[in-house]
Amino acid sequence: MLPPELPPLPALTRAEGALVDGYLDVVDLLGRINPARGSDTYAGLRAAQALVGKATALRDALALMHERGESRLHAATLERALRVLDGERRTERVTLPPASAP
Image (cartoon, rainbow, N blue to C red):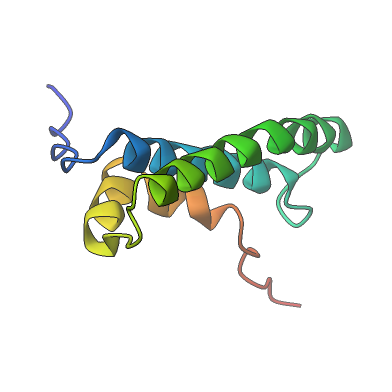
């Protein structure tokens, strides 16, 4: 049996695609760094080192959009793209886990 087919990504400009990809890259690294969810200092260190490059790529995507006159973010479209790309699960790792009962 095949897994259910994902909805198609909404139409994005190249810069919007780079923004979404860059944002999720940064979120993934922050999830690996999150001390409330991590278990290994070395993995956190490697993620922190990679974060610099990914944050630069994210900045560049936003700068390109701004230079091209794309002054507004189309939040609904970008939200759909983030959901298709599993953004909800990926951003969960950045938050604190639920409090455990004492």
